[in-house]
Image 1 (tube, rainbow, N blue to C red):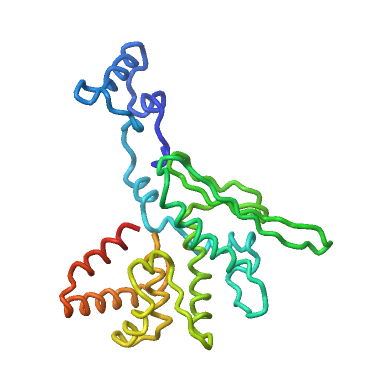
Image 2: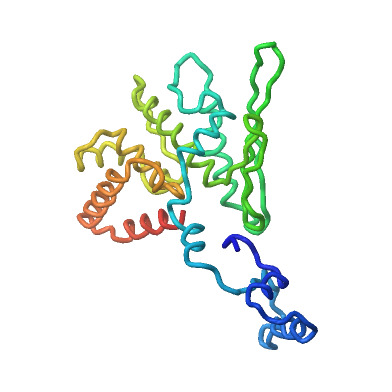
Length: 268
C-alpha cells in the first residue's frame, strides 16, 4: 500500500484480515459517528488507519525522494533553452517562465482558497522547422486533494507542483540575478519571499561580513527562502548569512527582527 493513497473500507478490511460482513460495516459506521460535543462541526476529511510499513513511510516522506536533476532534464523538453546561458540580445523562454512563476504563480498560490486545487497553464510557443506553430505546455498544479501524476506525452506537456516549479525557476533566477548585478547600473534582484526579509542594501554588507561575493550572498538568500530550497546549492553561504544576521541583530538589540526573520523563512 502506498503511503500517499487513501485506503478504502474494502482495502482496509483486507489489510487487517478481519471478517467483512454486516456486523463489520455496522461497526465501521458507528465508529464514525461524531460525539454530541462536536456534532455540528464540518467533517473536513476522514482517514482510515490500518498501518504502513516503515520503509514505505521513509520512501514517501524522505528528502531523497525529490530528484531536481531529473526534473530539470524533463523540463528542458518543454522549455528548450532552460539551463542555457543568457544572451543580451536573445529572448529567453526560461527567463519568461521564471518571471511568471516567481512573481505571479508563487504569490497567487499562497493566497485565496487553500482548500481548492488550482492549476496554471503555461504554453511555450515555438516555430517548427516547417514554419508551423509548435506548442508545449507546462501545467503547474496544487495537490491538496488529488494524487500527483506524471503520465503526460513526452516533449509536449508536463505537470509539476508549485514547489517544483519554484525550484525550476530558481536556477534561472540565479542566472538573472547574476546578470543584473553585473550591469553598469548594477541591479539587485530579490524574490518576493526573500525581499520580505532582506533589503537590497543588506547584500553588500553581509558579503563583507562573511567574506564572500555579493552574488554568492544574493543566490544563497533567494534560494534559502524557497520551500524545498535545501535541494538547491549555496547551503554553506546560507548558514554563514544566518550567523551574520544574528550577530548584527544582537549587536543592535533588535531580537524581534531576528525572530521574525527565522519564523518567516521556516513557514515557507
